[in-house]
Length: 492
Image 1 (cartoon, rainbow, N blue to C red):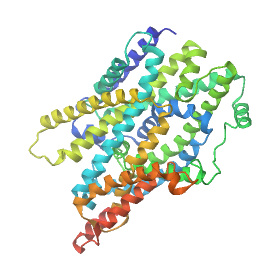
Image 2: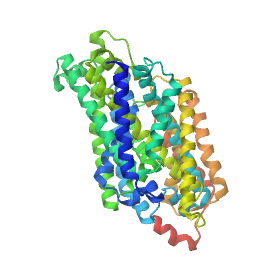
Image 3: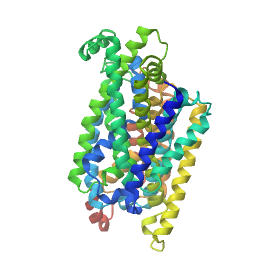
Image 4: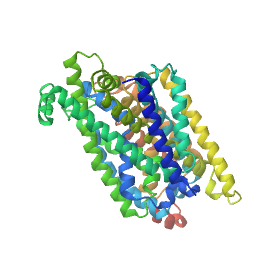
């Protein structure tokens, strides 16, 4: 299919998003932008969060990784179900009880202002790096499949997409993205099902026959059995649980949608529905990845990793399937980028600029400052996408999870300390503990062969990072004074 036709479809799809954004952002104020006025329907949020949780990385990298790790990624997703249960029945009750607009307000009430700012700072760093890595992957594929043929340079492609995202998130915030993410999740899942159907047809296999063929060739193995290896099932499931707790339950982007739901019970239904749907959807993506491997071998295609899926679709499937793939790819792109941009704006305004406490700021001034912050992050997204272009990685899913181990670990330690004990910390030391923990983890990670021999630290680096942060906070803490006991009881 010609690049011009594909580009026209992209433009029409974006026009639809703008229409949704215009409709949902009418009469929007700061509360609409930050938490959707707490009027979002739980089922709508749950479905839209599937797209946010998966993103373009799952759409491209998870199928591409089957050639090297079979179905091993499913171990992480199974562990995430346990993590989502902790979010639903431990963290969400705290967030609703305290009626926080930013979840890092919990750290302020329990550990003080320095912990509040430290938590928000690590979220901003984590989400900025993760979102731009996801954004880069999809921009690169759009560039390779469409825009190179139109003569558009990579930097211009990235700029156009960032502007698109800004246009439909600038006013409505969470109130808008709850609806746009639902639309985009549907587009991504339709693309997944269509590609599955055509690959099975091309291979002349039924789903059960396809699974049997993958098993014969060692591409359907789920559980790693080497206790010393990175892929050992217990390590992967534990890592998955803590990845979910940290990257969803302690992440403002994900939680701002959950706390936009009217009641705690509905928010809990949302998160557990998300957990179960995620298992099914990721299993389907892994099955797709196995079929891509079989198809590539059948037609003699030499492509691996993140480049496999686009190469098969754009080179070997019918034009209308290519069209569906491009729409699904864009649908996978926007939920992770738009939510991140909105959440980063919200966290900066609430946690760092303390906008809710600025009684001398009228709504016009709040609106003006929020727009400036939003546009500032958009420019940062653009710059980091260009950085990722310069250091292109074969598998972005591995890079993103590695970055998460370093940046979300301090958040895990901070929240665990705030929720699980009654000790008070010396506030001035909190940022130093949070910074020292990932630095110590990096030292351990780079020297693990000398330290542990054959044992390999994988995704459990996140847990190690959180544990070091927790221990450091304990070292700078003291038993809570009696006058603070009532406040701590309300949090725990």
